Image (cartoon, rainbow, N blue to C red; front, side):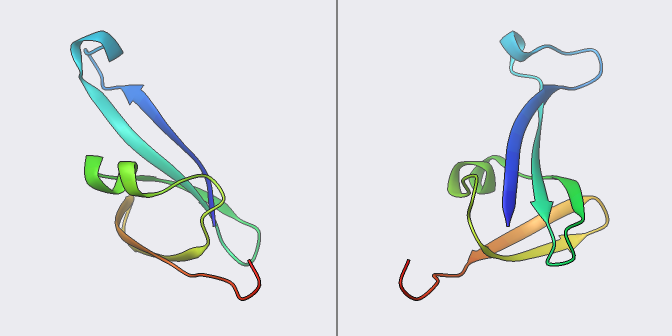
Length: 72
């Protein structure tokens, strides 16, 4: 599940200049949370509370496939 997403300035940059790192916080079914670097397209597609499968490699989330729950 997507717990949160955020923008942080990269080292030597600031939010006003557009130098940002995009992050998504994912909670696993075990209850653990992990922050992953994500691209702008994925940042725009996901929202807090989205349920699905996160495809990751190291500290990067490459894709996220939403799962629609029945009755939701």
